[in-house]
Length: 75
Image 1 (cartoon, helix red, strand yellow):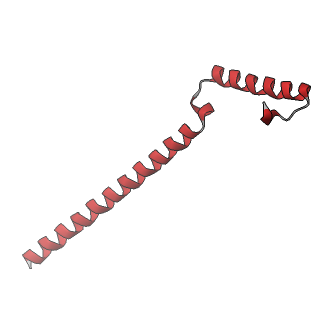
Image 2 (image 1 turned 135 degrees about the vertical axis):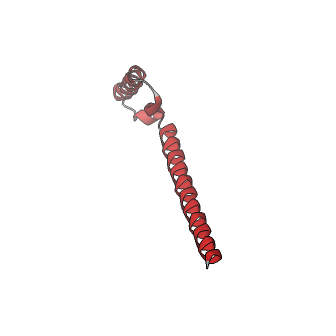
Image 3 (image 1 turned 120 degrees about the vertical axis):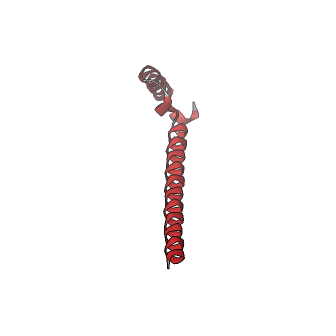
């Protein structure tokens, strides 16, 4: 009886450990995905001043395109 109980306890511990490991792996994967997403968006990594500069550049390009009568994608 004692042996059986010990085995059950060991198995329970093993299962708990496995679950914990799986949870940790899932969390790591989620974190990695989030990091990848933020690196895809370059404006997300820039500070507000740089963001402002980029938006200014974008608007000036579109304005330039408007004056020339061409779509902004061609510039």
